[in-house]
Length: 201
Ligand SMILES: N[C@@H](CCC(=O)N[C@@H](CS)C(=O)NCC(=O)O)C(=O)O
Image 1 (cartoon, rainbow, N blue to C red):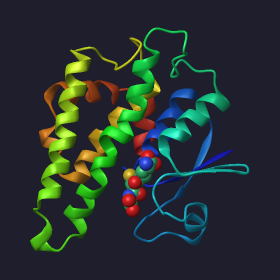
Image 2 (tube, rainbow, N blue to C red; image 1 turned 90 degrees about the vertical axis):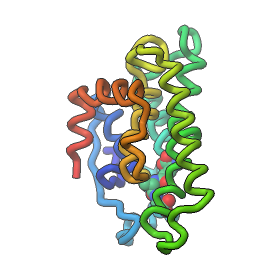
Image 3 (cartoon, protein in one colour; image 1 turned 180 degrees about the vertical axis):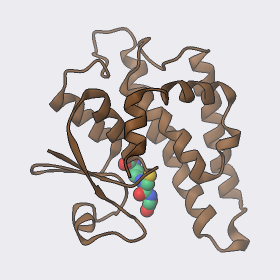
């Protein structure tokens, strides 16, 4: 069975949500980057969350885990095939959710919680915040009121993008998320699979 090293509110949420949508069984193990267990440190020496073990397979990138699970435990409509309209959007937003959005949040979160008081407000933190909000405006414009970012249906790309709403809380910018994106995420979060995944401690 898939073992997902998870911490509530971390990017492991993407992987749990995907598994819940697909009906793929999984178990979780606690993954704390502040107090990592020995087991977690062995699975992921970087101690970033999530990590995943599937037999001999070990992975430490949430979007790559999603691609792996869909390919290995699918087929699933959460994936868009190259022959379908919307394939390029699907690929773009699946990757953009991490590389274009959430990745900018890590140094912002670290600055907020770990930086000395006199370094909490600095050029870099302001730049990162601006970069995330600018990219969220872009997503909102791209959505144009539609409920999904690609292929006119719910896909893994939506799971990837929607994580930013959770990450934004840690970054202290949740109130600044554009209304269009807030509405998009709120709609996705109504899904029972999201609610089951978000409830996992
Ligand atoms: N690109 C990685 C990022 C993983 C990541 O940075 N996770 C955060 C928690 S959501 C973390 O572990 N931060 C602690 C750190 O960067 O040391 C992924 O998508 O899995």
